[in-house]
Image 1 (cartoon, rainbow, N blue to C red):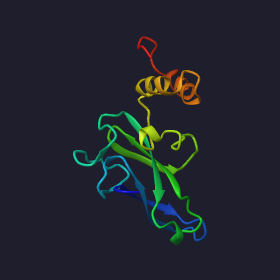
Image 2 (cartoon, helix red, strand yellow):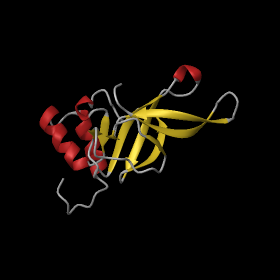
Image 3 (cartoon, rainbow, N blue to C red):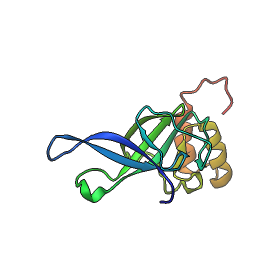
Image 4 (cartoon, rainbow, N blue to C red):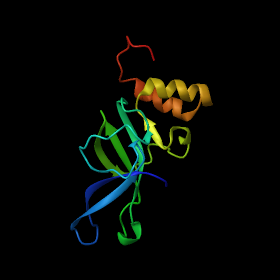
Length: 145
C-alpha cells in the first residue's frame, strides 16, 4: 500500500459484544504513518494526497491485521469533512473506488469539480455523472453547476 495514515476507533466485536480498538489504513493528507482518531484534523505539507481545502472527501480505508479480527469488515470509508476525520464506517458500496483510480481512491464531494472532471474524461452519460447530478439537486439554483 505504500505510505499511509491510520485512524483508530472503537469497534464492537460481534462475537463477544466487547469493544476493542481497531486501526484503519487510508491515504489522504500528508501520508506518512500519521495516527489519528475521529475528530482529528489532518496534517498537510509532506507526502500529500488530495487537496487540503476540499469540503468533503471519502477515502477508501482498510482494516489493519484483519486475520486477528475475524468478523470485522475489512474495507471502510473514511469521511473527511472540513479537513478533519468526521467518521469511519464500513464500506457501503456507494463509492466505486476501483473506477475512481484517477482520484487515488478518493471521492471528492466537491460535486462541481468532480462532475466537470468526469464529464471530460468519461462522457456526460457515465454513471458517476448521474450520481453527481443527483447530489447537485441539493445546491442553490443560482450557482452554476
